[in-house]
Image (cartoon, rainbow, N blue to C red):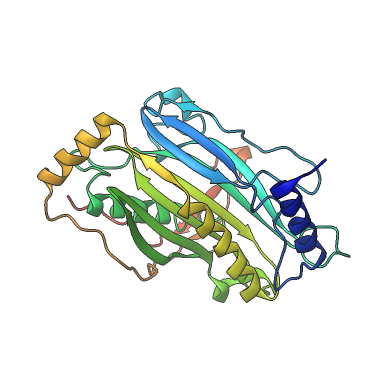
Length: 302
């Protein structure tokens, strides 16, 4: 039997679901988060995350991995050191948004993914602990997710670039959106399909990246408001305490680059996408054949 605060919370959730709408959607578990603690080679990450929820009953794609050795190359299974970036997922779960009670299926969803990213393309002598170098690495990542992979939709990035300082921890927030001008017949909710990213450095060649992949609904303004609110709620409760060795390296980086700064805001890059066609595997061609080059990767400047 439910008593006290648990009874109140249960009643509150029932009322939220009963009166849910597209203007005020219901998110299961929003006010009953789980505490997730991860050890990233001595760096302590603590998050308060709503539980995974899937209308069709599927489990989370990746349960939290409590201990991750970010220096073990075996964890970067989907890439090689020759790739610009190598990623390792240590948690992946989904959240859903429900509208009117008579609609049983969710109207929208957010897929949350947390990864350690190894920056293989960062030139020798540069460091993610230098804010300027971190910014360049993230621009290179935006390029890789854009013109470097033209099979995907044309994108605009970075959008809503912002910097947040929490104690000694630097957090970079930005989004990647589809370029609506390049969509021939956009759906009423196309503009609510976008991704938000939150990044903080872990050491010279690694950073933590939190991803929020959103699939919204119309009216778009309601969807974006609530998806961003969920992201902001999660991010406001994230704590990242660097390991003693990472803290020492951070101090060395500050002394080495005392004037290093990161842009407080950025406009989307005006990259030109290449012209391409599907490759023919029967004659040994790659999946994508470039017919006319677009913008080159952004250069690194020490």
